[in-house]
Length: 231
Image (cartoon, rainbow, N blue to C red; front, side, top):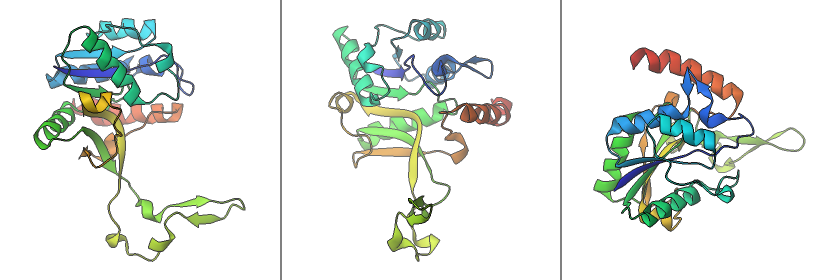
């Protein structure tokens, strides 16, 4: 059985009610649910939440909420791996043979069905523990620096200061959209960003974090102008 799990807790400090807040006319979680359905990959699409209102909206958009997530797994410091491992255990207790899980974040409005399908095929055909979406840094991280106490700057990679840009390795970051994983990898809480994982590369403009009200406004502008017109 292949399952999509959308982890959507009720608490959010920077954007209250973030996971069901209205985004371009609909609850933001509905976009992830719609994309999950459009892939036609999943035997079940499940929302993991401790919040009754989120559960109600998830069901409206044809997701299942077969259990309530414990409050101890709904805090700020709880990792995604723990939430997905709990979900797999809950489903297996109901007699479901869950072999692979795609965790899709409830704010992943820029993910496309073909991204999820491509990542699944890569995981199965190339035998990876995890496959997720990522994109390249706009500026190379080897040129990065930090501010020190006197407001001066300090290079993070001083040995590479004089390297030509074309000689620096291309660097990537997690797009924060979805994570395919074999059930046993999730259950064993195996680290995501290791040699047993790989990624599908997406355009930078579709890797939009939505963590602040400013991020939200920008994401809506991008969505209205770059997605809606071509959807």
